[in-house]
Length: 116
Image (spheres, rainbow, N blue to C red):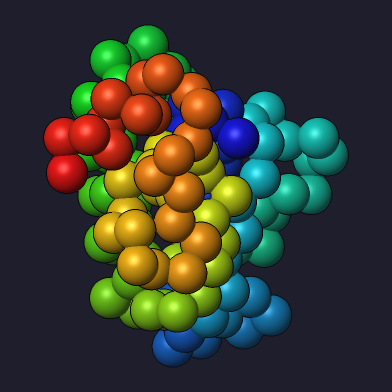
C-alpha cells in the first residue's frame, strides 16, 4: 500500500484516555473500509490529511518519516512492524533491517532507494 493511500492510527503507550489501544498502531487503507477503523485511537496520520495525496513523492516520504518519528519515540518496535505495510517505508529503510525491500519494483520507490 502506498503512503498516499494509507491511514496511520496510534495511541501512546502511556495513554490514560485510550486505554484499550494504548501502545498500539495500525496502518490501513484510506479511506477506511469500515467506519470503526481508527475510531478508538488517540492520533491519526498518513493520507487522512487529504492534501498529502497531491504532494510529490519526496514530500510524501518526508511526511511518512515525520509520522514515523512522532510514533517511534513512544512505541519503538510496534511502529516499525506496522510501517512495513507501506511500500515507500520498505524501500527507504536500510537494507539490513528486517522487512526492507530496496528492490521494490515500483519505479518511484526504486529511485528513492537509490538516493540512500
